[in-house]
Length: 270
Picture 1 (cartoon, rainbow, N blue to C red):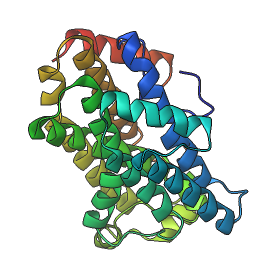
Picture 2: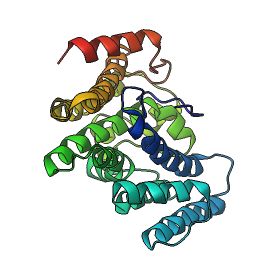
Picture 3: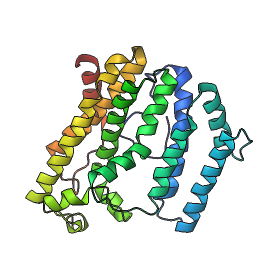
Picture 4: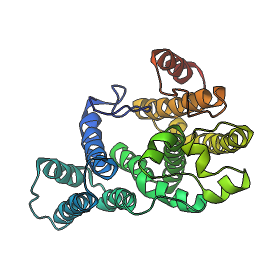
């Protein structure tokens, strides 16, 4: 899928049946478009709010079976009807992007986890609806994977997010490890930062492991797709571990060699 943004984790990959790739790309375009608005450094705050309000109004039109004003939402509306997707999940995604306009710090992990429940978990649940597997146990495993992937992205993007005025790290945990905003501002890598990041990485890894049962239960290519996503997340965690959590100077993006490792892990490892 061609996008203008680097992504560590596969989206609508060729592993999936063709009839699923198009719907996933549409869902991704919706999420990516709204996220880009919230993250833009060039758009005025009021304009961002207005654009996200417009997105919300388009979703409400779909909910009320009224014609939408843009091709994206027209396509999205048809997709929601054909696949009986819960529109509430799209509203949850929009909640997270709107939150980014006003909430720039997180006091504890519970707050951050709630953000993940809106910004990431709905994507996994939408995939499961497309796959036709919607029991609560599957949702629980999916939420665990999606939360982990969101946390991993937060850890990779600490510098970039700080430049946008945001810190997606629990403040109480920063305090307990002796880490302050100055560590990020001045790119300080010391033993406090190392220990703090080690704790964050281990939690993200545990969330991924807690969700692995999902790809074991999903049949065929759907299970392989989810397994590939999980192995991609684990590979990024391996790279972060290798740098001892030094996100200030090290590139942790997936490269061609990593892709080979991910393919091997997906094919030959449980």
